Image 1: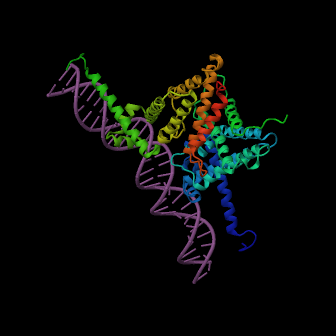
Image 2: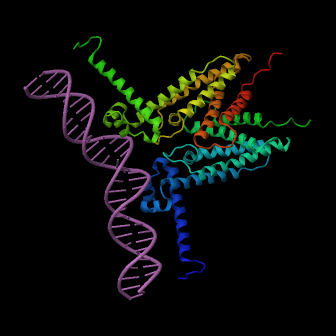
Image 3: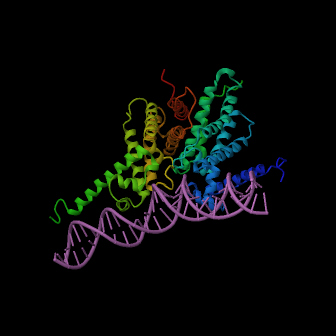
Length: 216
Length: 216
DNA sequence: AAAGATGCTATAACAGTGTTATTTCCAAAA
DNA sequence: TTTTGGAAATAACACTGTTATAGCATCTTT
């Protein structure tokens, strides 16, 4: 057993721990998506990975710590979904595509979305650090807003604060539609949710980020 | 003891039951607003009104039944807040005032709002009947939208479906802003939430319910 | 190599939850 | 007065998050 070789014993053990941790989170994530947030109990997870609850507590501290990890996973998935949106085309269309990807993520990963943005877990409030991670997802939207404004306008026309505000308004729009949809407040025969969201976004964008008149 | 007089014994008992029921709901509502949804346990309520949990179960069936009543209470409070908004002035301003009242209600009665529109109670899904009560709150907004469109436009221009869709879009806008605010996703120094909401609503209204050019 | 120290894990316990079966008890009817 | 009916309190069951205890295997030291 080499005491200070390439693979120290402690290092190997730590590596093993990390993989174990990842495996546990994978299983927990599966359970979450299969049976929802109420099925997420420490005992249930423990028996799922065939261990005692004690190891969960030594690994994650408490349930809040475990949910924190899921929270971060959710934002990681959201980030990937957002990064996959092609940036080509008109900046406005990029904003629409971004929002559509967000909308799609929220509906397909409803349980994750509920943890991230609705406060569905009782007594779970994300830590300040995690909240900051959440706000970082806004950066893509902020950049898109700035790209939307710069080409024909004076570069200094949109301040950082203004770009943030517009991005936040757009975010609230999508969040509102998603929220009502997930809460079950839906329903008029013949109107689709995508359609409504698109109309709302177009109104916002065309009013707050007006396209200059086409060059004649 | 008159068997079929004005005050039958059973009637008196039923009346007493109803007042008891109301009293229990009052206390439960206080507890909810004082300590939040996680404090709402059957045992806690029982000891609050000095009775056993059994009477709660014979009265409300189960916790879902009790929360259903709170759900209805919340919508009743929301309806009162909305009805208190004066209808005079421009229809557009009425829409803004309506949304401001909604926004204010959501922030001051955050726990109620969470029960009504976020799915904060685990495994609580409002019954179909209750969902319909919720959608009925939209009627005020729908009427306001129609009033906003009729004066200068052809009365037949806005169909019922179209009015519903626009009202629903406005609702989603307010809901989105409220939701992000309640979830803690707020924060740029110097921008207020009222300000952002007003901008978003103006964009929506002016784009979807355009005011005709003022008479010169 | 044997003995002691260390740290990790399973078991079991505590306090709390929703819900229900059992018992107890009091009031109405015969 | 006795019987009977229904309502309410008690206690139990199966859960939850969390933690103290105890056991066991490993590493360190002599």
